[in-house]
Amino acid sequence: MPTLPREQPEPPPAEPHEARRMAVSFGVDAQRYDQARPGYPDALVARIIAGSPGPDVLDVGCGTGIAARQFQTAGCTVLGVEPDARMADVARSRGLQVEVAAFEAWQPAGRTFDAVIAAQSWHWVDPVAGAAKAARVLRPGGRLAIFGHAYEPPAEVADPFAAAYRRAAPDSPLTGQPARRPIGFYQAAYAKLADKIRETGQFNEPEQWRFDWEQPYTRDQWLDLLPTTGGLTQLRPDQLAEVLDAVGDAIDALGGRFTMTYTTLAATAVRAGTS
Image (cartoon, rainbow, N blue to C red; front, side, top):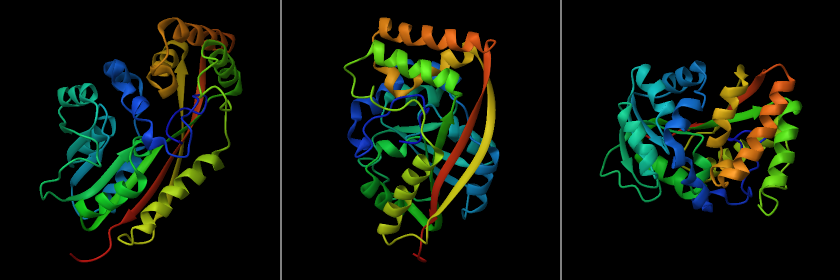
């Protein structure tokens, strides 16, 4: 799916929401995840808020609350739903109200919201059931916004990562993924999400948004982030060390730092109807 680093091998794209083991693996080191993962463009947050009828936000798969805190800072009231209690505990420690459940099983108890967001989490939600449930908990005119990052590390970093991962975990089903993919691959994935939203018949015509930005990383910063990504959260310590050593050497060869190109993509739609 398009929400993890491109140098990071991905689960098979057909039904990633069924890969529950990986979905709950990010809480292995929830504090590291919270500290290392990047936030989201302020322009994206502002556009979602401006296109919603009010300030009440439901954050699906809120993780440690990285996106939720940005919406809180912008004046929203946010409720998080998160299946991993370890991630939820970190989010609560940062001031977010969180209920522990998978979104498909979560009970809204009559509550409704002005916006339902999913930041790098919707690929773990059943896309058909998730879109229908989002429609049920949105107020008329409320907005569903599914978004996440596509990462583009330079080839000098991505290629050694892919080679080291193949050496360290040769039997992993993830080793066959390419080191990098064109942005069109990720845009197509978000177009499929838009199709699932459209199929509910409960939203106005979906839109796709794109935000391009860059962020510099030092060697230590990138090696801190990498263990929080899906394919690495399930490696043994010795396997992880082999991958990180190779990537660290590659970054050292670039002078100890590099600039990451990010593209943040969104599939979003407004709930139709007046009731």
